[in-house]
Amino acid sequence: MTFATAVSSASPLQIAMRDFSANAIASGSLPPVKKVEYKADAGVSPTGMQRGMTAIVVAVALSVSLADTALASDRSETGVALSPVRLGARVTQRTAALHNEVVSYLNLREGWDGEGSVTPSLAVVHNALAFLAMLPENVSLPESTVSADGEVGFYWKSPNVYIDVGFPAPGRISYYASAHGLIAREATNFDGSTISQELLNVISRA
Amino acid sequence: MLAKKLCPGEAVAKSKFGVVTDDELLARVVVSPRHFQKDGTIKPGVLPLSHIAQGGLSLMRTDHMDAAELAVQAQRIAGAETAAGVLLTKTRPIREITDDNGNRSLCVIDDPEPLNEAHAAAVQSGALGADDPEIKRIRGVLMDLFGGLVPLTQAKA
Image (cartoon, rainbow over all chains, first blue to last red; front, side, top):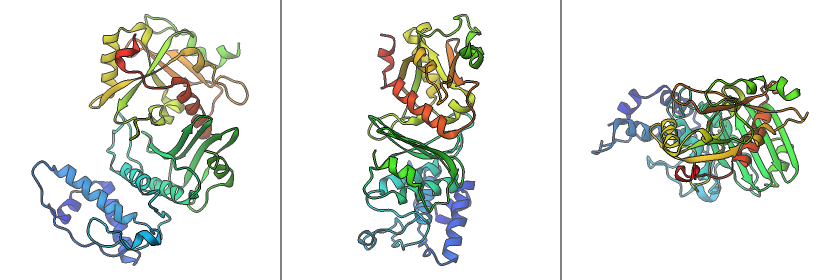
């Protein structure tokens, strides 16, 4: 299967990602992706191949300004070094696994969690990644979660700590945070550039 | 009086088992891999916010099920995935969850389904609005109430 074949049979999500990447390349914020030929090995279904392609496209589209020390050695699966781009989601070695887990939610199929469950939107995933990127280095990392209604979020849970942060819709954040007696709660707009100090104060106790 | 006003549905029996009593054991099915983190801990997603806020959280009345029926119903819920076990709690602690004003947050009602007569639901009480942070708080309380995973083989022990 070729890249062109994979894209031509893509889902609306994949098409959105393709267009996103194309726009980013056109604007100069992303380098062109080297065309890659894929051989359909026995046992690799077209669906699986498409998901793989989605992951690659997403990885490039959501590629991030890596820490300087990590940048030189980083390579995408296409063999093209990822350049720093300003997408509001900075990945470090510390957050890479969590970042990838959140990105993987874009591969969920409609109905993944029963009737009516939906795939998170790209914008919501983007919001979640922006939040993750803004967490200070000195706080513990959360676990990620995704809900049937497409909300993506993070949580911290340990004795006397329960922090539940979600992105229920593009540009929105909702949280209930409780850590050792300190509580913050709000549902408000989220522009991807700041986390409220009140919430950070609770997270810092987690 | 207030409880009856906020949760009138709790007094209505729809199944042959009658209303859900405070001492009844309730189970929430945990599905693998959907509800697990890589380290084996259970995700809050096992208690979906949208279910707590709107549709009602599906629960099974295990006191009215034998082990075989519990296993069948759990696997039916899991679908193509695996029913790893259940989370268990008594009804009373769910009914004792209150908001900042001291009002009941959730009602537990008898809610039989065509394929499961012993089905109950935890639904928002009349005191709650659609406040996302409050729903998240309730989920946190429920996570603590339900505790850890109980394998299906031990759920009726």
